[in-house]
Length: 382
Image (cartoon, rainbow, N blue to C red; front, side):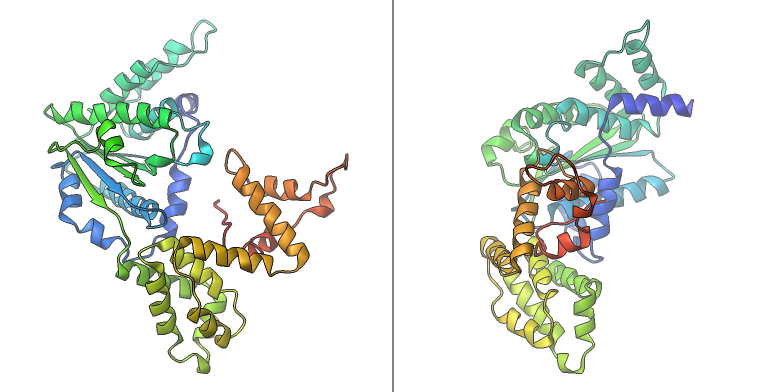
């Protein structure tokens, strides 16, 4: 039975967000996002007083990490709840996965997540209906929504979290939100299951959110603007100072008196509520070779995301000619691929020589070297 069930899940959706969630949640620093978790508007949504919670914010303010924090709290609550059955489904949107992240596949992913703790009969019946007498077809959106509705109704309360909605292409975004929003409002009008939707996104404009039905003045909708608090940025920097071996080593030196506070004050001020800026500044400091170099760098930290990226590129171009060329080539590959590129693919792409008919494995570059020459602009997700 378990083998048949797993076969059904694989047939339904190629998307799996469990590993992605683990990676994002591992980046979360303890103590951050508390302002959001403890806010009255979030608590109202959590308890079903608001069915749709729209969380908007600029790039780099920590929306995805906040989503992972919320998701993990919901997962933990679902595991330990003894008085009611709680379902949790989540989506991490990524423009690099545009081909796979269609409205259909995303809907299937939600169904696969929620059906794991309920009766398997609806999905088994769906699978058999489309895989009989030699036929191998896919269910319609209407069939998927019907089974999803049946599945949700088996819970006391169910949550759907969609992170980075703005990264979906317009067609997929509109179709997918129509499906999920209509389900939420359908359950809001009936007794029994409470279905709640949380969405994070860059600000697409009031008119767009109104068209998507995520902000329309009704009591079912609530909106929160996301911006990292000063306390969150400070907690993040503290964690990074412990994680970066070179910086941690400098903190212990006799001549580094007051350095920790200098770093905290300078980066918190320059970050301006953006985790991304704080990360880039920390990455810059982690390349320095002495306490004096760190203090000097703190005096000239750039303000704003554009200036920070410019500074990173200046660090790249200041390297040896070979490292600079390899770093630029690497950034070009990472930027221009139509889907996320794997480590092995990137290494092979960089090792391929134009005009050569054979691949030479000796031309492969170690990933640690590749990461070290890109000034923190490239990261690896497992």
